[in-house]
Image 1: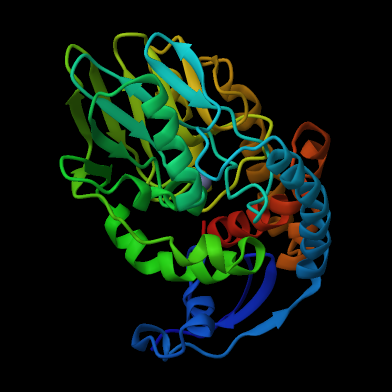
Image 2: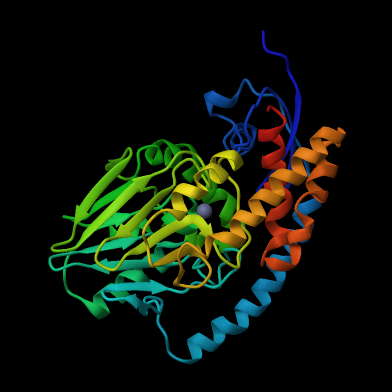
Length: 370
Ligand SMILES: [Zn+2]
């Protein structure tokens, strides 16, 4: 009979307390899914949760601010006559590789969830799209951007992991002859989380954008490594053990030595931990050893030097681990530890206040079992 233990963690901006055995941080947690979907038999055994809307209020203020700014920008773009499916702005970061340089922000109605760098690679015969954005509307705009450059068929749509800002646009690319590609664990992760994500983001993004979001899981699965050929252009896909998430996948274009790192690489945007901190830190040397000239981070500039661009993220994650271990050793309760850990990094990152305490909470739950 397992011992029940009070577990506190952050989940989508709320502090939840669960009475359950949960050795690792997972967001959304089962109890949160239970709150959204009480009929789910998998979670009915879990105890009820208490929600303290402390952090929620501050996130609400951020959203309100973004909505105000976004409304003005939205009117401005309407005034310029841009339609909904106007091509997403992209830039060529290497021959045949185009990337949308996304803003660093939370997902909102006004930005259509377009907060992750998404892109595409053109081979002699076909095109691969890498991540589809935070809404079907963004996905359509990315599709329009592809079509503005090439008529070649989109053979592959690759998802770098299961987060909504990377997969919500998938439905825009469903077509005969297009195969969806992802980490071997991605279909299960999407099955477990997509409905939760849809309801979690409905508040910030609105019905119109969320209603058309569908779960389109990959059918071509990468267990370790896979090579895709776009016609005289080979892409090497690698599936990684749990780090940023447990569905992380990277794409390496051999022709230009360009690495699409997904959210294994954050630049400017504070790293977000939804997998395993020790796992992520454990990958750093292997990632750095990839013979890429440049990388496309999941968030930040569209192209950065590799492996130099990894250093700030590595520093942040090491600091987080060190601080959390020190708090655990002192016996600091989780909530206080989450407020204290990693704070020396605050000035170096955007969206620090939105994510750091959540990262520290996830780290605490992982490291207290060491
Ligand atoms: Zn992510």
